[in-house]
Length: 191
Image (cartoon, rainbow, N blue to C red; front, side):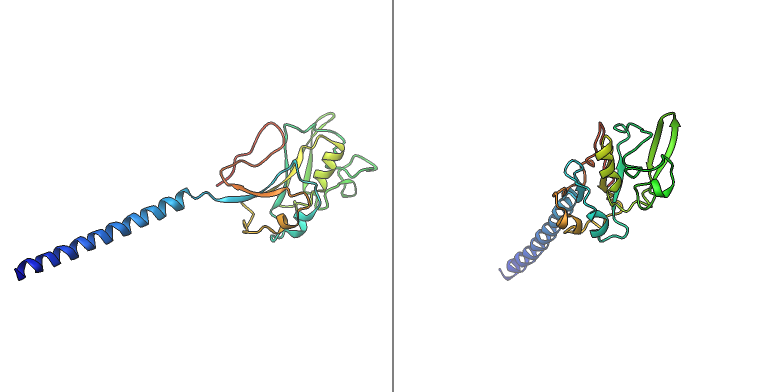
């Protein structure tokens, strides 16, 4: 009889150890599955709400800002007189700094054929001020707009720009969604 109790206790300990091990492995598996399925969120600017207030350049925690100008080429008219490139009332349609709207010369103007030009954004120089975007919308078709570059953004829990955005154009979206881009296409999100 004493021998039976000893075996029962041993069986009890072995079964308890197996149950504990199984529960631990199941917990680890559930935690891993939850982490894998938990979607990452990123900050994004809705170009249809953005008013180009200039706060993206001044209020971002990054210097220069993680906000950059994006060009929707399929909307662009490739105009000789680009409202996003030239200052209003520019004396000449020349590429001199005195005629450019961008304070950092982040927009490169390339001749295609008379009277068409292509405008390329140099993201290294772009500070996200939105001056070109405002000019393009005022005197053009709005092919320039601002976006938060996710590869540059710290993805702060509370975006400093979103807090001060007067048009509430910045929100968190799932990282799997594409950037909101004006025009007939969307740029897929980089993971």
